[in-house]
Image (cartoon, rainbow, N blue to C red):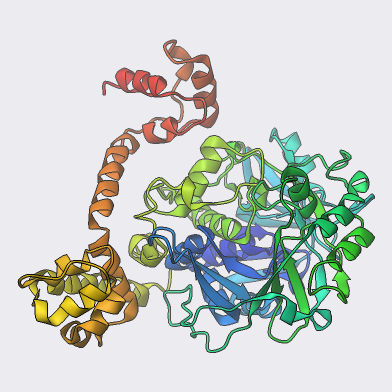
Length: 621
């Protein structure tokens, strides 16, 4: 009935979709198995992509040939570049998407791929022979053969939904939980845990008083995620901001004794940085109000997502409290918020290519690894799909360094440090964030993906080369072209910076902290004349490279030092127990995690700098 597939991807969420197209674009024959074809790429929580650090990840996915950025550009209803008041290392793109269009576009792109097949049914087990995965087993007893399997089960593994004192099995609202896989993995020797996440109520936008809330429009000149020729956003929907109050908090507190969060019925840990409204009230009891982002679900629906009001309180308490929010007095609810508990597998059980240590050619990606967020899941899916293909071809794994991508930081953190709570990416987790900007992801990663054999990147690579050359040419122009006091002093005085006394190179003027290139080119016709034919993206890159050149060089020197440790390789069968000079914790952790390099060993929790010195001495370094 079925051919033997190269890769079977279990789960049709963000991780599963990216895993499927990554393996397919590498040349593998892929089967995407999902319980419901109508919920492929479903945005289970808020209908948005990107945000702080997450936006950088989406651009990295795109630079590597993934589809998340392309789908977002085709389906967004609003775009904002966050943190523009800070330095470019912090700029983070975020888009509000049309939930239905987003899922529909993903399915359309998947179905258009000749290397992707589909099967709609629950997968409740994997087939393992001689320590190697060789297929999956479905709920009706089918065994489908494959050379590798990627599990991207999201919140579905023994999922349990909580609303007040009610609970019932489910992977998300209206969908059943997945069973069987956890139990089998435990039998195979894996360690599992429980985590929790939540979602807010959905409400009827026709019943809200929008004039009583703060409006939050999109950017005046919206950008996009993909480096490809995706459509620019011509019109946008606004979001709005509302606030809770003391009255709202008091109403919510009446349901605390029935909250599964407080009465012990929920065992899993929830996301620290996206807490429920009851958790916020409990933890920040000194705060009189909390911000709510009132977000549209799409162009042609009145359904509204109340971001910031995640809750597992009884539905009547949620309803009463929301109606006390200014602008929500006549609100009608589509469905209450809920919490969901699910199984995950601590990611220290994985190699750096996301393959499990216990079963050959079995890969985990997404929330099964303890992460939270569409973007974190999608990038793991992409890397798992690539590495599943490489593994069956017996080629070297594709591993991104911490200095190469936020994706590299995320996977390195998961595999070496693990996580006891849902892991979310932040810019602060990256040591080299001046190098890992959202504007240069294509320069960093597209050449790597092209060299790897990812299909369809020829035009992208040509654009990368054009972009690099343009930035160099612009820098050369500024370094070699002089500007006279008469040309620029009026502008400099307006900006509150010292006037010129003689001709200087334009480069020196641009480096002044009060000056930005957008304003300078308007003031100096010669600059505008030179830059007018050049794409704005190329101009922005050149400006950042010039203004932050010293900081960039310093980070590159730090990377070079770290890479010296990354080049010292450790064998998988290295016997750490023989090195009595290592601490007992280091011997235990190193034996368990089997790092590939000294650099990776140095980032394992419990391995000290002294332990690294012992390893280097032992290896004659």
